[in-house]
Image 1 (cartoon, chains in turn red, green):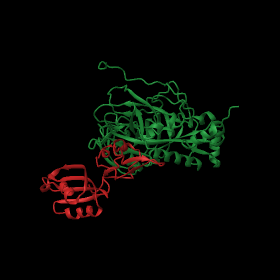
Image 2 (cartoon, one colour):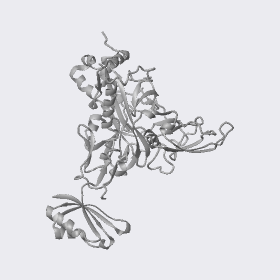
Image 3 (cartoon, rainbow over the protein chains, first blue to last red):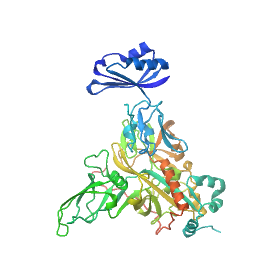
Image 4 (tube, chains in turn green, orange):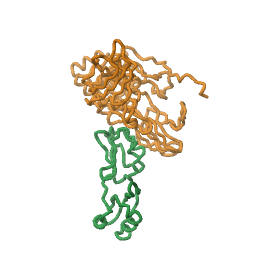
Length: 136
Length: 389
């Protein structure tokens, strides 16, 4: 199974090797898409994770201890269909081609599997139709 | 014998409900199969459309008089400055004017669309006070229904062959063509190609002053040539200009508009503009007129220009067809470069279809131009100053 997971951790975990634990204890193949430590030293890491489905679920249960929050991410951005005009300008800056305008109807499609969470599309959308998905 | 039909005859068919209308995309196939002479018998009207950012857009509004009356000299609508340079309670609000309090995300285009959607807008005005207009300050919440006249009047829309944009510098730049990533990462292009109004009538044989059009959902009109109107341009054999050429000045009732077909846009680092939806019907007056409607994306070429050069004249990097731009990638100097549109083909197709339905349902009649546009217009640059090389 391949999925994206968002890890949010409090300041006391800043110096702890959480990613190492995911690899060592749960045998997950990990690709870090994005990581930051922001206000109040709260950190975020967006992983793309490949591994046994049962093991991924176990990881989510085990590691959700106080100060750590792990959650599967279905979509990184949300497109407001009432605002989107399907112009396609956002596709210019989408390197993994998660955003595309194709097909006979020339409508914008978003493939969350391909999205790496770079957020370049957010300010580019002239109709302000793209926002972070509610989880993030 | 030269075959022809008149606008009057087409309108008679619309009245009788037997007019044949095709969109500019649909007619391409017919023309390929049958040629203009045979196809001429089968189609009366071709609908064309575009939907994209057009900065030279705005609206005239009249607020009616307060008691005692005021001559509005300084005006804001939702903090967006509007012109105080007209008669007492007239104003013009431009789409690109920005809010004094929210310059990054609200402007004239938003005010116009808020009005269209029936929202209340805060009018604040002041004047010095005169014997005939004694009041000096006014604040009111106004909606479209409270206004007298409210009409869109856009000095320059619907550019014929706008150039595409690339950025060959090594830093990202923010333009009205969108954010352009450095090192020629991608090409952004405007217009809807084969569906675009002025590509289907490149010599403006049927489109002229007074032509009734679809404007933002309303039945509007072409008021005049657009600003920077240029028809004395080099052309390809099929008549398509090699550079940006003709433009249109258009007018229409705000009350009839729908934000499905007109919407505000904000370009990061540039500012506010307006997506304008325009549909223009082309009366098929002759096989020659029809033949121009058959020009397809692979036969329409445009220049890709390097927007990172901060000069009036920017270098042409490549010349490509709209079919190549539409395919998602073009080859420049042997390198594959991604392409992305600014105009919405989906919306333009919808407009072409809506206009087609309106004509077939007898709700939209065609017009003969009051006057035709000149074909020898040129554009001047600004008068040269001492500060120019």
